[in-house]
Amino acid sequence: MEKNTSSSSKGGLSLFPKIRENLSQIPVKIAVMSGKGGVGKTTVCAWLALSLKKLGFKVAVFDADFTGPNIAYAIKEKVVSLKAKAVGTEDNYTIIPPEVDGIKVVSSSMILDEGKALIWRGPLKFKLFQELLAFSDLRDVDILLIDLPPGTGDESLNLAQMIPDAKVIIVYQPATLAVEDVKRSMDFAKTLNLEILAIVENFSYAVCPKCGEKFDIFDGAKLKVEPDLKLPILKEKAFEELFDFVQKKVIPRLKK
Image (cartoon, rainbow, N blue to C red; front, top):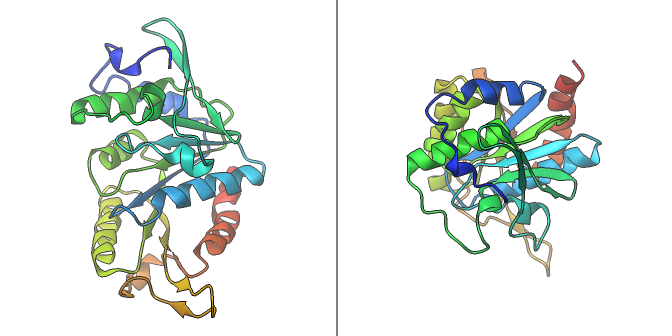
């Protein structure tokens, strides 16, 4: 990337109006989150991006996992590092995000060399979060997907503040620890008034390649959702169900 976005003098809450302006023309914004790492959240986000693109929509992904930015690789194997351009002046510039398989990707990997760690404390990551959302060229985007890091930390709070109209898809696996943590993600969304679209159970089972028998990978812990929430839990054929769910529940929002 030709301009390091972290060098801008802008800070605090001053970029919130710019963020709202930049994202206001995007009809649908969906954050994919999880309570615990390793449950396939990034894979679900990448699959969703590719599926929506195949349906003819213009898709962008904001990789908010700054210390593990690998959504580009999940979209297209062997794409590890990204290069972007910043055009304009120091105080008024636009980041031209790269495209991976026709999907715009906004990521901290645009300012990192391959294999290099981002060793920043919260305030710097908060600043980068703001600047990437405020100055990235997201014109003509129909759907913005946000790949959050696991848990309910700074990045998730930043999302709730900066993109309050984002909807949420939560990913978990049927293991006791993951179920306990997904409850926290659900509570986070409820507390901050973020609408949960669906919950995806990943790794529901494996299939023996020799005999075709299904077997549990984890301990088979079940997630119980309050009936009044009316939340769909997509599992077993989660990707197919998610695709069907998106066609019925998400795409109609683009046509309003």
